[in-house]
Image (cartoon, rainbow, N blue to C red; front, top):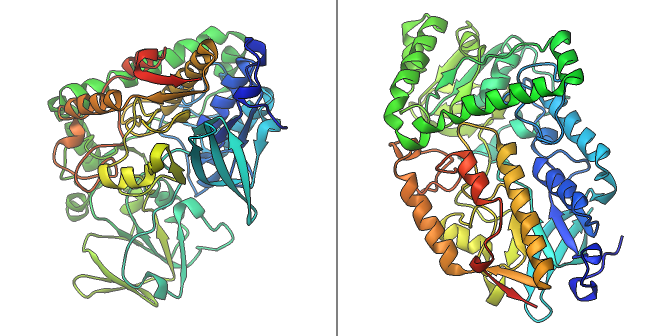
Length: 502
């Protein structure tokens, strides 16, 4: 497949064939590819670093891996799945759904696996992007008129920065790189971290291990997960009467969207759900000392709210200890805490999340006059316009970019909004017969100033520190508003906010 460039394209819509490089093949990359095909554009390639598509749902195969957004909403709006087996989809089922979408909409033939993008540099003279690919150890240059980064923020596992990590002689791995060949039966296991992954895999491995030490820095808020099987009768209705599934999807959406009022409008409204959360903790954990250890010390929503109905019962078992003393170092046979206590371990599992803030962009991105996206993000924190465009990086778009994450609803909704926006950008390029479009710096500056001002009313700046923020406290991961307001902003591109070049 050798697509033509802008310069070689005719003026008609049918021959509009920019060379487009989509980076990543999760929901964002697959969704973007489907949109391009629906627009009649076939001059694109999806570059995937791994050997298969799937992104997050390919990589995170740890025991108990599942979504915390209901299945009927955590899917493309144009491709409902009437055969979800549970209210909350598991990893294998979501992964299969993504592969089904790629196959059904003809995206598979546009995907190139084992092709990791390591750099993208804008050529100002010739007005296109020089993309560098690492294909199984061989560097390969690619030219693209448009680059769409769809790798997402949760693609790079973060290992803890603890002294002596390299000295550990047992088995060590991150939850996003789970070693299924390693038997946990009868092992002394140390789990570092109590985030979204840990609360799912800890209950799964607890019955199998001899002893489990869970190292907790901050107790998370846990709410019960209303998960249940989707019976054959409901699946029959969804399959034969599709409007019933659309009704369920809309009902879930508005139920979740209503929560944004407490997240971004008036965090004081969190008092009632906090009472419910503490009541749930009291019902599930009978031991007063353990209950005190597991009681959060921050406002609900300031950090990610977690859903689980089996986490608290697992921690109440006799073979589990929750350790709140800070880790001093890791030694050959375990972990030593600040109080000098030695916690023997055969295995250390790091449920320590992903590299989101205070890190460079996932790959080298160089724009006009040598502008370095990685350096900019390290200096100022990740920043973009609508999480999609960045000034001085013409024809470079992102999906699930800065400040597009959610604490209350489905990211697929946000992804579809950005896909719509990028599609409209391409239509505007075609309409103007332009070669590039570059976001105005003042537009990005004013947008982010307003965004951070709106953020000051949110629960995410209520006193805690989380992966939503940079070390300086700037919230760069989340959208401080309703998802339908983001959808409205991304429905059409405002051409006056860009500079176009022929």
